[in-house]
Length: 349
Image (cartoon, rainbow, N blue to C red):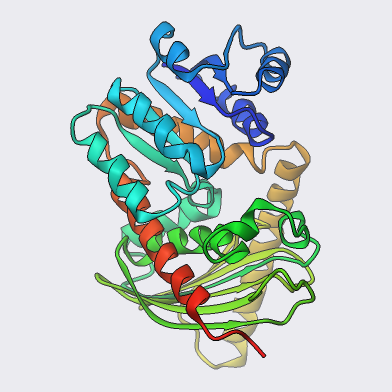
């Protein structure tokens, strides 16, 4: 399938590297309003056709898919132009800036044969794909709940730079980060969520961040509940997840890509020792494999490759997508609700 990329910022390099490993897709064109940026990217990745005019590219190229990697404010107009032409669309997270835009986008899809998905990259990592399979197979039993710690450091460029665009979003830097843990929760307990509690705190040193700690409780309409802890004051980046089932507990480290299955265990010393050895050996082996993957530079490309391969297969075969437009809309809705609540909280003392 012929594919074009719209938006030639830094993230486009990761997408182009991943697409080189997707045999079913061929990048035939690049588009960006910045002529120098699109020409530079075109030369680097040996893409023959480059454009600064989206309409011209869509009219001249025989495209099956476009990948929208522009800033979030430009997602809707770019995606709508493609959808009107029945061109399938991949959009970088988030789908849109707010639910009004998301509704407009989904309304346009009603008169089109185009499919749409969103780059929820964490869901396409090895351990999250394994987790989804374990849940579907019933191996961990009924899902009762989940806990996510999504931690960043104060040295993060987006956090530490006062002029960064993320601080101008609804909810500020929290609004930029929140879609990630929210869509992970959706994948575990269902797309549609309701908000139970929100606790926000100010613990860091940056005055331009009103809040830099957040604890949220969510409830699924189909199964289970979940809690999310977001911090910008941690000593290192970390994304740790516990999934609680009636048969097993899953313990995930999305940074190091490790997954532990914790089943039933008696309180005897022998069983405890056996369990400790089993966990340690599994962790050691997975760490060795992941280290080799990181050294080969495949840590980012693997989930992106999975995303594109999955979407191409969905377009070709009509199979269900992992990330549907409805799921993406619900992510925007919950993010918007949380950020409105955060912005309306009484200022911290």
